[in-house]
Length: 115
Image (tube, rainbow, N blue to C red):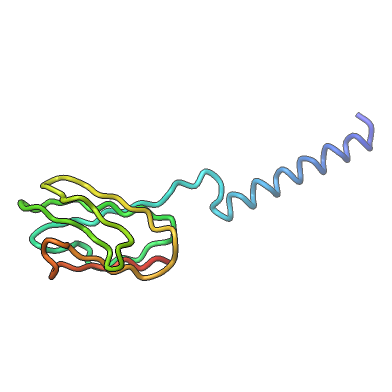
C-alpha cells in the first residue's frame, strides 16, 4: 500500500474510533429507555416521591385489595380504575414536578420530579 493510501486509511480509522468513543462516553450508544415502578398498597404510593430523568416511563401497579385510579394534579395523565395487580404506565418527557393522587381516595398523593 502506498503512503498516501495508508495515511487516508489511518485517518478514516481514527475518525471512526473518535466517533465511537464519543457515542459511548455520552451514553448515546445503545441506550435503553429508563423505567421505574411505583407500588400502590395499603392506601399509599411507594415511593411517594421519586426523581427521574426526562424520558423515564413510570409504571404504577396496584398491589392493594381495592381499586385505585392514578391522576395527575393538572390532568397530565390519568389511569383507568386499576384493580388488584393491574398496571398503568406514563412516560415523562419534560422536566418539571408532577404531583398526582388517587382520584378514588384523594388523600393518597405522590410526586414525580423530572430532571
